[in-house]
Length: 116
Image 1 (cartoon, rainbow, N blue to C red):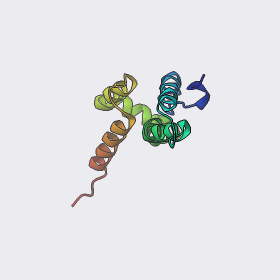
Image 2: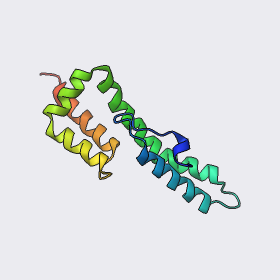
Image 3: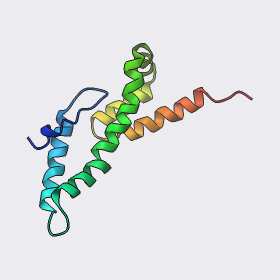
Image 4: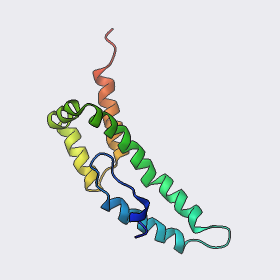
């Protein structure tokens, strides 16, 4: 309940179980490490900010154009094996949306490089 109540949902896949479990684990960590001068809420906020929220922000940067331009998004995922494999690694927890976003930005710089 602690994790699911936070309503963290992956904006790319609309999946929420992973973030429910992770935020629940983060809440337990915050409670166990709280004490005088360190409230569980402050610890939780810090852990969430550096973990889940950072990833969800990166995922939103990927999701917005995918949903705004679904045909383009489909073509990118369909035609680019590297992006498909990286997203699969994200789903397995072996890579992050921040990693995937960095790769997409790198690829876009190559596509939109000025011609001299």
